[in-house]
Image 1 (spheres, helix red, strand yellow):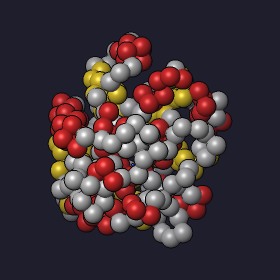
Image 2: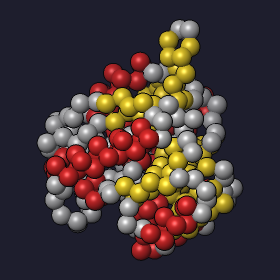
Image 3: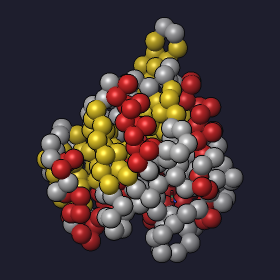
Length: 271
Ligand code: GLY
């Protein structure tokens, strides 16, 4: 059960962020409106939002998910793999102690982007990518084991068209994984019932299951119908301006369950 999410709107420097999409310059005013709609959708799922200020110094900082992994037992600060994003972890480091009692960090030479980390109940799948290196995955798996989870890694460096692991799969819950064809047969996914994504609709592989709601990207009507058939309410959001910057739904928030305890607040995050 999620109760909270950390979000940060795009800043005035948003268009200077990293991208390989080739979809043109983002429109900041439209991106801000899309972000506001995204925040309203999270609130509609019952989440209380922790809203960070936009940060001009880091054009990609709206993609807050890449800066931390937050679990039921503690949080792990990442070391984002792109040099221009390395400084983003510092401001999240100042936020996490308000919500987590155990905090670990990925150390040099490890790098991890949170977009490469998929939680499926008590198990984590870690993508080794252009951003998350093998050392970062090794450190992260160690911290997760200390926190009581299992972890496995998937090398996605040869998979065309995906920046992060979660560009190509998402956990739907109840043992089901939405997955693109290129990842569908991977041994790390054999425990899951896979829901395949059509080749021309791979952007939709990144989705959010929040409590008893699904949030998916707009523009994929067949996938939308397939998701509705699972029986949960589905909201489709226009992500056009974030897609231009290689961003998707999960990238825009860190979702967690905050549980008040006597010595402060502890937190849980699933996703
Ligand atoms: N623009 C998002 C990223 O490359 O990390």
